[in-house]
Length: 99
Image (cartoon, rainbow, N blue to C red; front, side, top):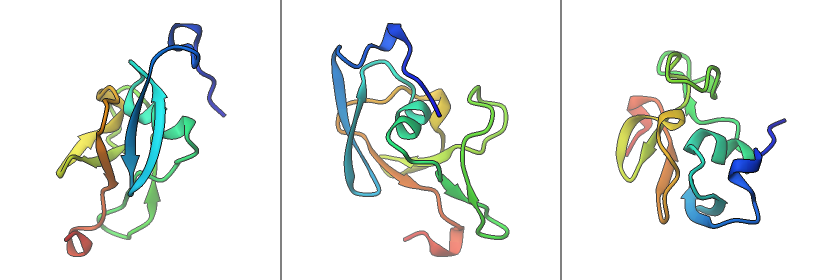
């Protein structure tokens, strides 16, 4: 579905990060939404009203569909943050389900 551009050559430096406890890797400099999508992750959060799965839509910070929890801080837009070494990412869940 998504293709890595030549500027983010998979043969270049990579970073390791975790999503829902699973270790993943992505090219250094890639935004977090693209890094998750390129690793096969399409559900980033749950709708706070219905609990329906949601994922990135605009990939430019307008829609807020890519909200995740980054290193314990919720409400972060994955498309607006570059992936970094040892980042711990969790799906943003409905408020009553968050620990």
